[in-house]
Every structure is written in structure tokens, then in C-alpha cells.
Length: 248
Length: 203
Image (cartoon, rainbow over all chains, first blue to last red; front, side, top):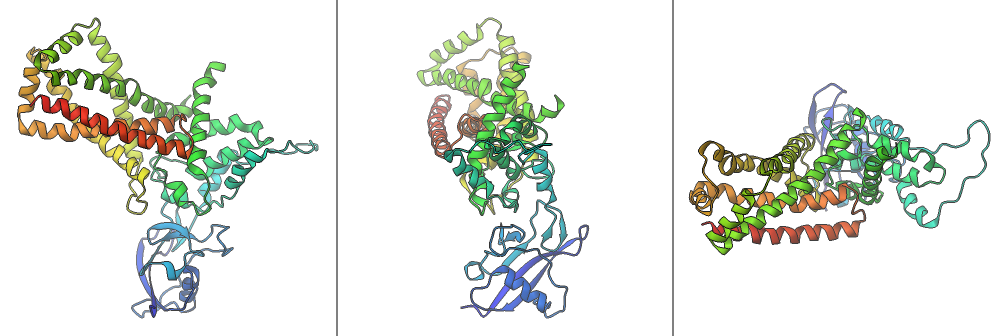
């Protein structure tokens, strides 16, 4: 059993500041997760060289892998720090902020881009207008099964980090927002905006930028059926693109 | 319309890779395979192609333009991609990387191949024949270019067929996609056997 936990953390003092590495060694205790280690550093911000430093900044909230706030790159892969158990990680444990989002400080990033993408593809259901339109139609059990899977997305950004097409050159909106299009299009009330969502996906940075590397589904901590969802939307946007203008 | 331009060009890029560029590669392999039946059979097959009416128009419209479009947009696709197989060493991610690498290799190879065996004819007036191709491949340096060029082209088509079928939404389910990947592997092996058979026939 190791006596120490060795962490190597990519730090950055501010949005426009340069990044640098800082190492930390903390005493071993069984059954810790990465967040507990970060809390230890917060209590005693001294690096491995024994020099006093600033506490490492990170975000976390639910601590049970449903909010996605503590997502960071741990030993090369994007995942949640709360479910990254020290006893199962190879040391030194390397922590980096998600590289696909602007860094605010240390391990804290601004994931607003994903919210903007969700807005762009109309990832919501239009409900009552000026008066109550009553209950909507029921969702069939068959659709409910996979739509529920898609509803478990917590916009953590793991799929964005794993996707080689998500970068400033392509402007790809990534699997997060695209998968929600399939979900809301499948909803009987949400289907009213189906074409608007498909057309948003056919816009700049849309589904056509998908390169089929298919890392997204493997990186997704919630096991969303992303490969199938993207492929189904490839089909729908292709049909809409090929036949849409023939209907005009 | 500008709003859909990336969608339009990407889909066209994907389609032209199969029709007509992929089909042309199969036709090219078929004709070249006559070399395995000896110089005369090959020369007869070439003479038939050379005798096609509207040959230049066919070459430009069905081969050169789609190829130029596929290659041009392909370079843009390479530029907008990135490499992360170290962190995510999965099969499809490797295929994603190899598709881009082989695409660039094929493009460089084709510039040389088309120049040496098609465009040079315009200046020298030499007719295509078994003897000419054999002389071309007699140089070990040229042959060394053809081995990776041929393999890259076969890979790019085999894997491209799979990603085209997914990208156009023809194959959507995970099981069907696995089946398509296996199918792509079989195509790769079969075309490699065919390709090296006729390449060796010229030596």
C-alpha cells in the first residue's frame, strides 16, 4: 500500500495566464477520490517541493456523478473527479482542465459553450402558450427507453473532450447538443419543432462536422447511446437535405 | 444557402469518394487485372478504354472533377481534425486518424501517378501499354512509391465506404456498424490481393 499520493496538476492563474505544472504529495488514506485530495491541498497548500502555494481551484457539486461539474482530465482521459477513486488510479495522478473549454483558473473551465449549443438546436419542448393546451400525447414505451437514456446527459463535456472534431478550426458543436435533438424530436410535443432542430444541425459546426471517430460514446460516463443517436440524425438530416428542397 | 454550405460540401465530399471516385478505382483495378493474363490481354483492355467515345469528357467530368473536389475538401477535413489516439486508443478513432493519413498519402501518390502515366503522354505522345507501365515500375524507387500508394488507396476506399454509409445515415445501429467495419476489412483484404497481383504482374 502506498504511503503517499502523488499528484501532478496543470495550473493556470487566470484566463489569459500561461499554464504550468505543479506537483503535490499528500498522505495516503484508503478510499479517497480526487476531490478529497484537492480538498487536502486546499487545507494545506504546500507543493511537493515544500513551498507554500495557492490552493488549486476546481468545481464540484453533487459528488455522485450526476451534475458533471467536477469533470476534468485525469491521467489523460476526461471524467468526473468525484468517481475517480485514488485506489484505482495509476500514480502520479495527472490532473488537467478540460482542453476544449476556456480555462477560468486551474481545473475550472467555462462550459457555457455547451449551453449555447443546446439553445442553438432548440433543445427544449415548447409547451403552453397564452393558454393551457392540456396534456400532450403519451410517449410509447419503446421510444421512452432510449429517450430516457439521452435525458441522462449532464453536459459534463467528456464527449467534447474525447472528440477530435471538437476544436476551434471545425467549430463543431459536438455530440452533447446533437444527441438532445434526437431526444426532443422523439417527444410527441417536441416534434413540432423537428425541422427547425434538423436545420440547426445542418448549419455551421453542425452534424456534418462529425468525423465518426466514435470516442464520444466510450467517453460518456452516463452511457448515452451517442453513436446510434448521431447516425440516426445523419440519416434524418441527409433525407431532409436531399428531399427538403424538392418539396419547396 | 450559405448556412448549409458546410453540410452540403461535406455530404458531397463523402458521396464523391464512393461515386464516382470509388467506382473508378474498382474499374481501374479491373482493367489493371488484365495484366495478370499477360501483356496482350492488358493492351487489348487498354485499347478498348482508349477507344471510348467522349473519353476526355468522361475523364474530366467523372474522374478529375470529383477527385479534385474530394481531395480539396478532404484537405479541409484534415485541417479541421485533430489527433487524440494516445488518450483514446479505440478502433474507430484509429480508423479516423488512418483515413486522414491515407487520404494525404493517396493525394501525393496520385499527383505523381497521374503525371507519370496520364499527363506526360500529352507532352511525349507515348501510348499506354504493358511495356510502358513495366518500364515505369522497373525503377525500384518508383515501385517503392507504388506499394504505400496502393495500400493507402485501398484502405481509404474500404474504410471510406464504411464511414460514408454511416455519414449518410444508411447504417445507424451499433451492431450494423460493427458489421460494416468487418465488411470494410474484407473489402480491404480482397482489394489488397487483387492490387498486389496486378502490380507484381508488371514486374
